[in-house]
Amino acid sequence: MASIFKPHADLLVQGGLVLTCVWQAGDPIGRIPDGAVAIAGERILAVGTRAAVAAQADVTAARVLDAAGQVVAPGFVDSHTHLVFGGSRVREYAARMTRTAAEVRALGIPAGIGATVAMTRAASTDDLVASAAARLAGMFRAGTTTIEIKSGYGLTVADELRMLAVGRRLGEMGPADVVNTFLGAHDFPPDLPRERYIDLIIHEMIPAVAAGGLAEFCDVYCDDGYYTVAESRRILEAGRAAGLRPKIHTDAYSDIGGAHMAAELGVVSADHLNYTTPAAARRLADAGAVGVVMPALDWAVAHSHPFDAPMLAGQGLTLALATDLCPGCWTESMQFVMQLACRLYRFSPEAALLAATLGGARALGLDDRGVLAPGKLADLQVWDVPTFEDVIYRLGNNAVAQVIKRGKIYHRDGTGLAS
Image (cartoon, rainbow, N blue to C red; front, side, top):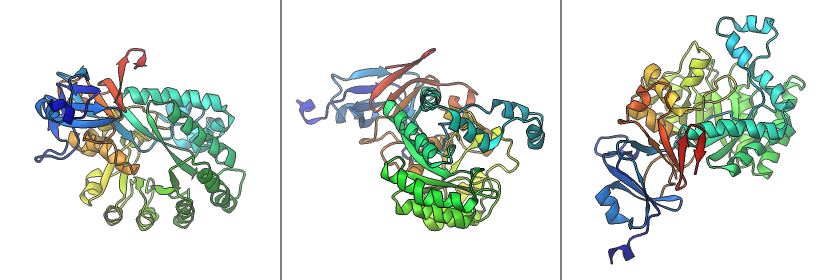
């Protein structure tokens, strides 16, 4: 009789250590030993102890996923990637192990953003889809259920739109959700004057992106050698006027005032932040921005000035971890990013998990994921490890046994994912 008054669950995940990422009783990640998550369709019905979940949802006919001895967590939300690109810069990366940038150039090895722009332009759309889909599948196998993808390797109207169309196609292919960001202001093409290209971004690219509904955000690389603060402001304001919410790459290699300008504009996120000052971090925090930091990128390029996570967090800035998957930082694993964050940047395991889930969701303006709570999307991952801390302890290991995306189970095996 009681079941008449309780919603029916389709899926019940039970028996493991459930990490809700919702603060409770002094625990920032909301641990529930021997917990349960009831799911109906794409949404979570109830989370708690087995008894509490059974009291809130009718689980009598639910499919049961036994997570005993395992760990259940929200799916990762990767809020900064350059997933779509043509070719590879492996020769450049390998050469930089023992040579300077100048020496690499002297060897005639194509390098930098410009090299990837040329390879991306030369690639067919089908090749771009296929290569990006393979990387996206690797990310999903490692627990990432929502991924942001930036353009920025086209630098022409047609190629920027094509990159965004590829991102949209990847989202339609599933199972991961894709959020597109327009980053025409990633660099400058060699064949156009600086001001002419900025006009192209503002008067042709942004209107076309908005008209086609191809992106949710407009981003710009505001740093020494790239876009000035004034140029970045013009581009982000034009994007905002067209309905694209602002994001920014800033303070990666210098402090030219990008973070202060970003705070004034009310960006959703400010990313990199290697040279961000305490005052700028406080302004970003007061403006409600999220700071997106990328340990793997700093590690891959042997950054001479790593970001200061304790300082950023100490100024009240919400932090998100992201892979920055790109030709210069080819990692598909948010678990690896968490490991670097904890060992090199003084994140606690709890802070790293929150930054990789809830922080990532906030950096994309999403409030329906990143935590395990009633009404949220049923995006979960099950780790085949005995303790939560094993995820950052077992270096290079993929702990994921199952990914649940919008209520559907995907099992991981040696050859990939099968529903």
